[in-house]
Image (cartoon, rainbow, N blue to C red; front, top):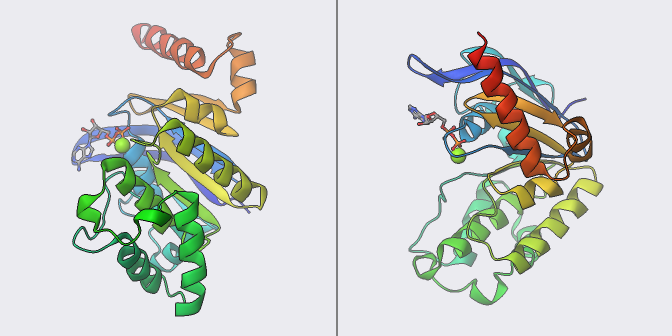
Amino acid sequence: MATIQVTHLVQGYATTTVLNDINLETNPGDIVALIGPSGAGKTTLIKTIMGMLRPKSGRVSVFDQAMPNRALLAHIGFMAQTDALYTDLTGRENLNFFGAMQGASRSALQVQLAHAAEVVALTPDLDRRVSTYSGGMKRRLSLAIALLNDPPLLILDEPTVGIDPELRRQIWTELHTMASAGKTILLTTHVMEDAEEATQLLMIRDGAAIAQGSPTALMATYHVQSIEEVFLAAGRQQDAHISHV
Ligand SMILES: Nc1ncnc2c1ncn2[C@@H]1O[C@H](COP(=O)(O)OP(=O)(O)O)[C@@H](O)[C@H]1O
Ligand SMILES: [Mg+2]
């Protein structure tokens, strides 16, 4: 069973088309990175998979059920691009609030909370108000909230923005451990170092999938040594194709 299945998705706002014929399948153990520049359509795709936007055409299913589907949300650890935190509350209070909303028992929640805070290195700052946090700390708290319930599917929109290299490494180690345990991780990024950590890549440019596959397969296809070069080569191919139609 595919965790996420996107088939011939066309998506947009009002009369504009933002995504054109996107296809994606993710399976347990996959770490899938959506890569593309700002405005490419990454967040629009994430919101459509989450059921926050209905497809203009095409199909989106999660755990073999069509989205939108409110009941499925309990099984998805979601981190939005814009932090949705209570800034008057402390980090711990935010974690307790969102954990309770996800239906965790009080005792189970304390164990999960401690683990999630460790993963994002926020343990020493948990009792400070979120209004005193830096941008990166807010990203880390949002990530901790997404991890809280130990969900089988993580959907993370720009999780590494504002996070320093050492902590980035620690977070990636945790994501690899989770994927090895059979979880599915879908994330967006415009940073090539993140893309190199993924098992599958979907490169989006101007709403179109310009390249798709594992990092090693893509580098072999384009005869290049880096993900960045794959993106540039696939982009040139897209431009050449557009100028011919
Ligand atoms: N609510 C909206 N209404 C109209 N246009 C939007 C809306 N959200 C995003 N867009 C447009 O859709 C395109 C893709 O945006 P987005 O999915 O946020 O890209 P990314 O996440 O890759 O930066 C952009 O041109 C953006 O301006
Ligand atoms: Mg975005």
